Length: 369
Ligand code: IPM
Ligand code: MG
Image (cartoon, rainbow, N blue to C red):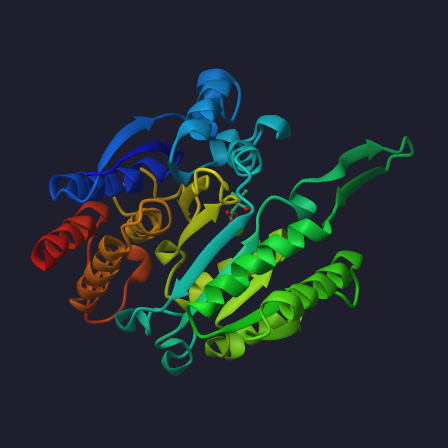
């Protein structure tokens, strides 16, 4: 049986609650003999700041670099609103992405049939939706320098963020999108703002070149990111794979999340380059939702995005795609049976807490076995 090194970083808010449920699914995977895990757990975000004065410690970074995969919960909350910018909880997540080289963020948005009425859009627009946003994750305005606030001395301040992209960064994320599309419905939509931004001009040019050179058999379409956002809520089923930069990807993936019924449904994978020698790639898996401090500690959080993120780890890091399929199937069945966490409440359904939802998913997994 394969043995994998897994680092769990539950973080803040509802992070530890949903991570607890993912750990129960991990235990089930071991019990059923699909794989075994060497699991370590550590601090990230606000709780790490409380313990070490940093959003992630050097020792934790070393563990992340040594792991086959990192499972991440969520970070942040009002308690840390006033901490210095450099050590704010989100800095821990951004450092993990940057130092692990996790340039490819894959955010699938699937609308389970049972949830078509939980979306803020009409049922016919979202029923059967199955799209993926491929977000560039280690470049752009998130990391570009200079990134400063300067006092101009006349009662005014000036804030600068810098949007930077090099050719290679656009090439490699475009390849991830084209490869993914080949296994799906063979269509990529690239989104940028070439009408306003130089990075948009280069993005458009490089994605087109990669397409011409390597992926002529995949359909490529370009959209301005604002129009893309509009199309995402007008007719989301027109898309298959959307590829876009770090900031547009952040915004568009939150929009896509609501199409599926709730932000509490979306898992994500952040992947690095495949190592030519070991054939392995660094990876971090996290739910797209945040730390939801308003419901933290109450047992109300939806564990599906976290459990789905574990499913993505099984698929992309552990070669256990069939077990990942089972998890998705179990989630679909439980939703079809009418179970809903508070974020998904709808008529004719039963509202349950975090624990009951994953109890039901585990029971269904056992039944599928
Ligand atoms: C996300 C989040 C993060 C981001 C925050 C927590 C830094 O919104 O993963 O979408 O902006 O990338
Ligand atoms: Mg976001």
